[in-house]
Image (cartoon, rainbow over all chains, first blue to last red; front, side, top):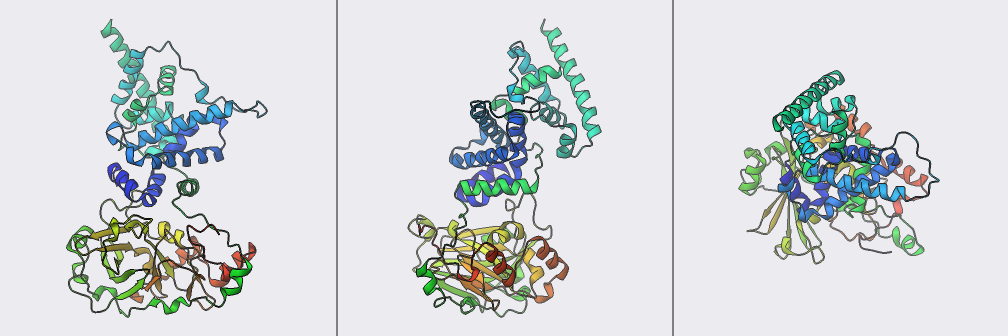
Length: 184
Length: 319
């Protein structure tokens, strides 16, 4: 069932559409939540947030505009926002709850030295890598997935993901270098 | 380069997300058990699955319970078809085309069909036929079978001939009000289980607005393995049926709960016993947690609940 049909079904028979959406997008939603909340969210929290994401989409079912992006990107956006809300709530808690492990990705502050134009060029270059390399880079740097997880999702071996990623980074380096030289 | 990528992807805007997450992007896998928990939470939060009501017994409803237990067997309409492949019945052409239904089974009017009149509705089991699940009616991106599906075809119309799909939910019936549950003879009803795991949610509805009839095709393919022991189709006016609505009795029959006011339509499907597949049935029995009467009674007893006396509670009842 394509996304347009899914949205139409969600508007007319939500009790049928929601399970389909959940089966299809839970993996993505949880990956985004894990990437954006890191160790601050327990598995239970993430499941709760994931269900909040699906309910949010259900609540806005009559306003979904697929011309602005796919359902997958909409779910990722909703999950991002839910993760940010969760982080705000969590970090307001008293410091009695110890935080162990590595700090979550969301705690990393964006580097202002990455100029907007360079950033745009970089993202365009990633997209132009084509598939599956663009998705590999996205999964690695947006979702923080391991090479094995990426391989499982794309039907590739861990080794193949590692090799493709290395080649992609070299290609991106070369593309951006070429653009810089061409631009100066 | 890695640092730049981390920075860039960390601050992705929604428009940029759309650039990478296109409709044909690979789907990320998820643990089925985890997905099931998310599904359960979501449907409850969205109010799309009736929360299981605690069967609190009061003196009043305990006293009258045994007097009014209805033997649903009396309501079960038995249809004596020897094999569904030779049954013929008429259906709207658009529906036949849409589902690629077997032309041999739908070419002429059926001589017999099972009919239930309930709650101002006329619900009929038109027959059972084979076809292919249409595009757009798949479960989790996969079709239940490559070879086609077997459907129970049900028609629903209002007794007064009104086109009820124009009526709001609060005032009457709407196409979306109806739910279907498969019951296997000898096992306690478990609507939610059958609906997704068993039939892949393969429901198709055709609205014949000229004659004010709703036709439903309900995919029963995976239930064929039980053809030799009896498969029943319950049509209800909720999403699923729980023990507050219908349950198995000690004698193996199915009973509506005391005071049940919902739609009562229960049809025995005319399946050819030769279609039974013991191995497949055993696999379902093992995987899908079927419970016999004794087992379900014991399960509820462990929670301090008498399965036989769980009273009906209307969906909008506060009591």
